[in-house]
Image 1 (cartoon, helix red, strand yellow):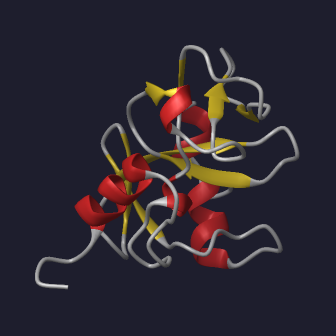
Image 2 (cartoon, helix red, strand yellow; image 1 turned 30 degrees about the vertical axis):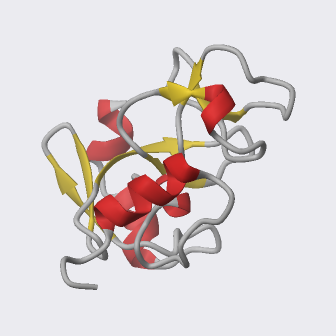
Length: 124
């Protein structure tokens, strides 16, 4: 993981450089992870099994509280794997892109809405 975040060819280069898989959210490197420049939220970069970079929120949440299609698991080697719609037992991770204040407020999930509000600028 340290190699991925450290070099100029790492995810930060994708976020700022604008490659075809560039994330919509620009971020800055921070000790222990990444800080979203839009909302100031902490996150971690992980590459998906399809090779796309995504920012993952720190922490774990009960899978049953996270809508299908929004559940992630990070493997031992740091790869982000989308969990199937039937994976509702245990805990999962959440993509920062689903709760960043740059995106519209998430519907249908009190947990995602709570995290989105946490990232929203004060007074908004």
